[in-house]
Amino acid sequence: MKRETVQIAFLIALIIGVGYLFFRMLAPFLSPITWAIVLVIIFQPIHRRMSRYVRNADVAALLSCLLVLAVVIIPATLIVMGLIGELIATYRLIEERFASGAWTFRLEPGRSRVLERSLSWLAQYADLSELNLHAFILNNLQRLSGYLAARSAEVVKQFSSFVFNTGLAIFTTYFLFRDGPALMARLKRAIPLPESEAEEVFERMQETIHATLYGGIAVALAQGTLGGIAFGIVGLPSPLIWGAVMFFFSLLPVVGAAIIWVPAAIILLAQGSVGKGLFLLLWGTLVISLVDNILRPWVIGGRTRLPMLLIFFSVLGGVKLFGFIGVVMGPVVLSVALALVEIFRRKLTPARASEAPANAS
Image (cartoon, rainbow, N blue to C red):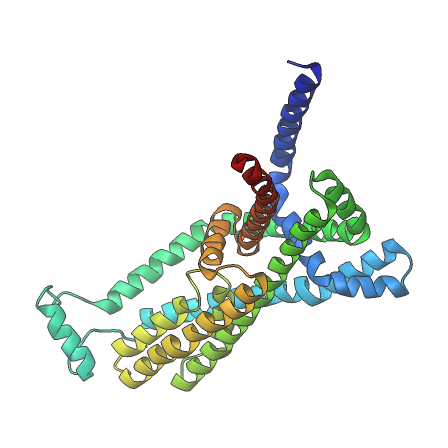
């Protein structure tokens, strides 16, 4: 074996080993780093315009970071904190009303035809004489209170982690704004691909991030708005708050806004408000869900040129592997993988074409 071959093999093994250690060092901070990259990509056009007027790179990066804080991080933090406070207040109100007897939830026949038929059908298979849904709900609310009280220390720990990660994301964002072009140029040179092909991979990444974020936000905004309108029409309390909650749940794959409007419709039906319950079910199925089925493939799939089925599973796998940031990371990994496969196919095609005449001769 030639000495050069041994050196190359040793160098490859060393690069793999050091790269693995480097990844293990960065793994605990992967989420804030990824969020910083996403924010920089989104605000890069604004930062470029700002850099034309502010020649100092440090000052331009600082102004861009302040803009990110003012437009994204501070409003999102305030909205989430406000929603958490409202949800806690709503939960306490529900528990107090059930405990005091102001609200009742009993499966009594005769309240509505739909309920009476449902009870008659269920009575054929189960004994409903001892069923007290009011007591069941109250007991579970009390259990949930105990669980939340026991997890209060964990909540404080998670909040501290959130503050720390947010600070890391802002810190990383500043340096990416300032040194991003130089880092990108060095990264492209480090990749063993021609410059045009490396540029193609990074363009795919940017397109996927833009499409995933803008598409997800557009769908979530539409579903949250339509859900809040439906809650207001049927007279449910705090439609604005529940619309905002549906907005955030719509950002999550599989779960979606249905985790809010389906239980609300079931409660309305069980309480005898059949018309309101059916309206909410039809509105959620035909309007809210339809927005997701039409708007998301059009915005995300059309811009990224990726099959919607692959996008769906990449988001699921990304969330399982990376957490919430996997909503973006999953499709990005998918787009990079497909771009690399396409580059490999282009390189392999000429080789096959050149082999064909040789085999024919």
